[in-house]
Image 1 (tube, rainbow, N blue to C red):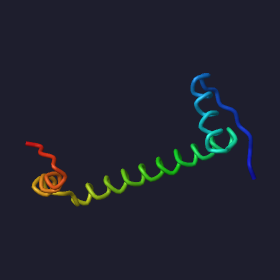
Image 2: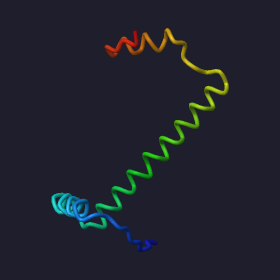
Image 3: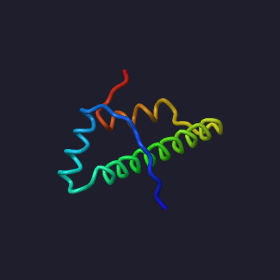
Length: 80
């Protein structure tokens, strides 16, 4: 079951949304639903990852500084 809601946004943002929806062959509502789905999925994932990280830290499961430096060095990063 779907329910209706309304939001307020500035004209420039609404115009960009409409242009994107039109380019993708979607209605404004479908584009907004897709955006909200992505927002919810990302933030649920992020908050779960934060909770897992906190739980790992509470249990003492953390990478040693040397491990962090070695991993970053593989990516071409140097923390000094």
